[in-house]
Image (cartoon, rainbow, N blue to C red):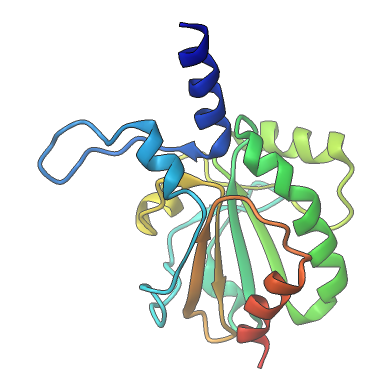
Length: 183
């Protein structure tokens, strides 16, 4: 019993999965399957336009991704209850500082805006703002089931790739991926 509990805790910490029904209406796959597929680069949506679905900006006003057209945008979906999400936020903050005006980093919390803003303020991030999607419209329109998920959009608001799972966004491998939209 103790071993099962430990295994369950490890799997839960590997990725934060948003349950979704299977196409036939059955219950979602078990946590082990979700964890094994948690960290992966996906280019199957490349070229698709950013949805115009509304979410909240740092001031609590509605906005959407097409307003960023003209500059590449790295959009990270996270939640205050998701340990892998919180683990990668410092690297996203450093990336935003390093990229300056070349890349917009948008971290959209799947929480109430005040809860996300409070977490970011307490963490004292220099560049990350309190964007939020409390109604989950963005995750639904982009068919995101796992947190964290990060999507790179080019300057024409077209998806380049998406990455499921946490990552060091300042690593050389990450910089090479991001450079795909900066060319």
